[in-house]
Image (tube, rainbow, N blue to C red; front, side):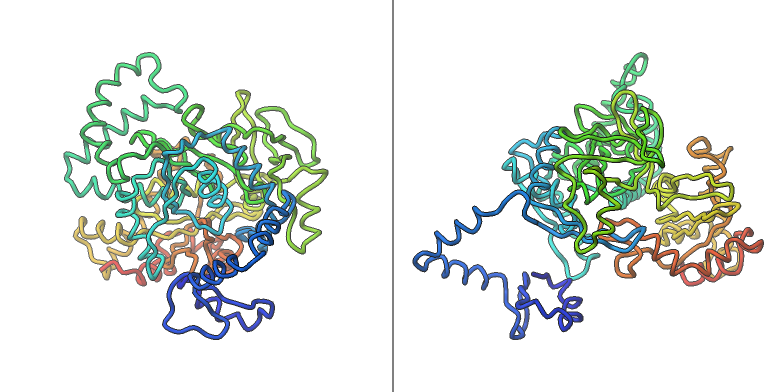
Length: 530
């Protein structure tokens, strides 16, 4: 079963798929090959078959024979840190995880969601489709375009039309939302921009980490925040339909600055955590219980422990591998017994993620073990937080990947926002063709990264030793089309490292430490900044 956007890919490999009897198209085709059929035709054949004597009884017997242990889906991992594996999820896995999710978040029957997540991913399956179906709530999809970009352009109209109450999101989408909001504010002039930034500053100090908002003397700010909400924040919420209560963020770590931003606007983005092998929900923040910066509290009817390298359980506050046990744990990996035995031991799923539990029951996820930066002295650090912060808090940087594999220092691959750089050059009366313009752009990107150093705006956010010493600027983005990003918009580290290995090697040379090196200048010359 395939849409027009994916049909061409399928036709390239259909000759190798001897077991496929029919291709069912969701979209009307100009012509159909002998093994192709439209979805409406399938429905017609089904209705006619059910009308035949005895077939309804056969059909009911068939669907009532399905057991919780029967396979419902094989969902492939993203391959962000290793080869993709087929995750077998049973009917019981999905049903269990839906009810576990209900223990964290209530979905009233009048709720509507606009599904902007991929429908081929367990986050979309469990949270976007099954959880809403289970409560009799409503699901809408973004109107499809001929290309992914055209579909994305349909999003603003769909938001206003559907007026969703809850949206599932991933960090890449959240960052895009924020940049569009800030772009719209800037276009309204300096006075509005100053008011907006002041409103954010006051709101951040009032809200703190969410659970402790408005306490003590902070309560004195409430009347002013009501005014800001009426003249600014409420207008922004209208662009999302005006009925949006909150987002649920998953798929990857969500930068705390992004969480504070949307919390200030009155449409909080609550961080959750899970992975496809867990169907996928393990924990989440919610309206009733949240702490910004955490991944929330655990679902019911699931055990979780934090383990050291030897498998010993660690106490609260100690970092180690997140290990879980419950009815949401996958059956195993498709035709990969070795990988299954490595992931599931005595019923416990070893997630491969590093984290810790706080004393008050919140889970903090620090990143993938296989993604860790490793210094030459063996110390390890998760890069996701730094990457999300750099890309999320800078309007001039779209994407960032850090690298350190037992080297003296960390390096970074950075994809700039070319539209923002173009505006910057115009403001400075510089041209992209001039040496001064090229160097100015490169130094601007370097300065954005330097904001995380000791004397910078965000100097206290991360340990200084893990900030990049050398920067490689790239003109080409990490996308699904070039295989450097997966369907939930997470970067695929292994493929990026493979493609840019020569650049990574170069970043460890003395020449690369001078940010205006020839290689970075060449990449800037490729950009459309004129």
